[in-house]
Amino acid sequence: MSLTKRMFSIWKRLKSNLSNGVSEQHVKTAPTLKQTAGYGLVWNGYEVAASVLSDVGCQREINEDCGRYVNPADSNLTANKGVLLLVADGVGGSSAGEIASRTAADVISRVYYDHVGDMQSSLIEAFREANREIHSAASANAELCGMGTTCSALALNRGSAVSANVGDSRLYLVRDEEIYLMTEDHSVVGSLVKHGIITREEARRHPDKNVIMSALGGSPEVSVATWDAPLPIRVGDKFVVCSDGLSDLVEDKEIKEKVVSAPPDAACEKLIALAKERGGHDNITVGILHVEPSKETDVKVMRVTRELEFAK
Image (cartoon, rainbow, N blue to C red; front, side, top):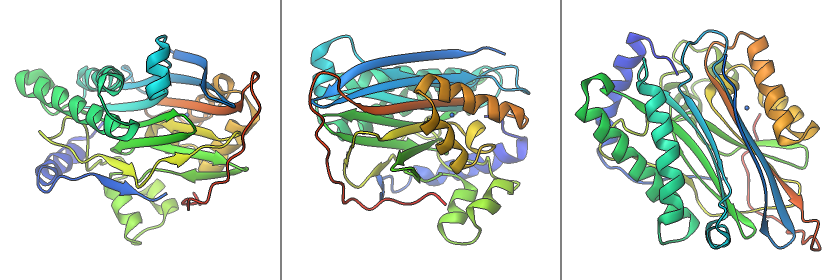
């Protein structure tokens, strides 16, 4: 993510507010290509297929995004914590944003599996540790001063999913041919939309649409947004995490159309190609995870009564 001086000054003023009254927020409930993909059993009756693709876009020289899909080789880790999918979008300019997003992906991937606790508490602690390490590095090196990163992550295991989010990278759920936005944008326009001042369509054209209000590394402590409860998963569910380089240019309904029409790796490629056709003004990163019926066991279909926010 590239910030103008005006945007950066707004963000720095807002940082001081983030260290006061920090608490977890609960949200009711796609020139160098870097790709990772995986396939693994998560729970009796369920398998996941996942892919992450990152592209520098059409106008940037450095890719400050980082995407990661983790399916541990250690079966004990997989049994206890399942799989992890995340996207981070670095800020700070030069190489600082790239360092911040990569640090977030590395630290969250490590701490999530090392932490003793359930999926949600482990993911929150992983975000907190990433925040501490990025903030410490920025404080110790003048060249990295002000760096930070957004991050949206999904952990899935044993028939349920949890999430964590800081900034404006997004997590979507595609279920029964509908798409649901599962995170709130921690940004100036996200706040305006939340309070009914502007619509989501107006937000796409707002001059401050890329001004974030929260980032990993922006303050010594960070407020991590989570769902109010784990989400029971169903066969056929499809999850998407992405940076704003995708969501700024590709509408939610278009994301859904690409995700349901192809396997994860091909869908990632199609979404990034679409964003680049429309200018590719920013780095573009998307991760897609499909929950599929296991080929080895009978499928157990779960009824879900949890209320979801429909992405209009």
